[in-house]
Length: 123
Image (cartoon, rainbow, N blue to C red; front, side):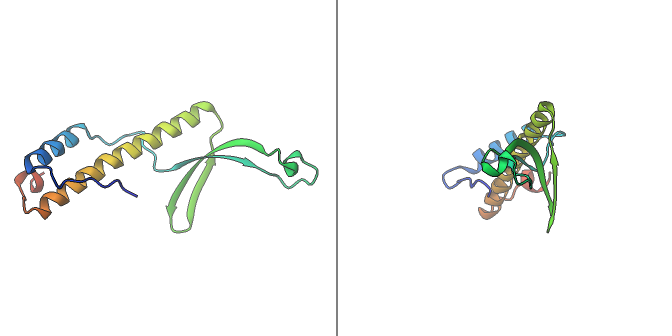
């Protein structure tokens, strides 16, 4: 769920300044990954294995992507380097989406106020 920004007591000029600051700092992260990082402990199917008595195998680290309705891609991150790159890519994507959401809410608020300006329309 997106973070909701409150602009009730913010002036139009302050919103435009914030918008300009967001646009200046926004760049599409080339390392961004829209996915989840999952750490799991698993049990196998062997009857006499220690995992059947509570000592599960793992941890296993996965990158999980939802690609569409009923379509999920999940793969094992085997090395610490892969795990760190996955976490960094996910963080970069999340940070970009948060800035994009704030920009979207500023634009919607400016439209709601009837303060349609060249800055809003002529980008």
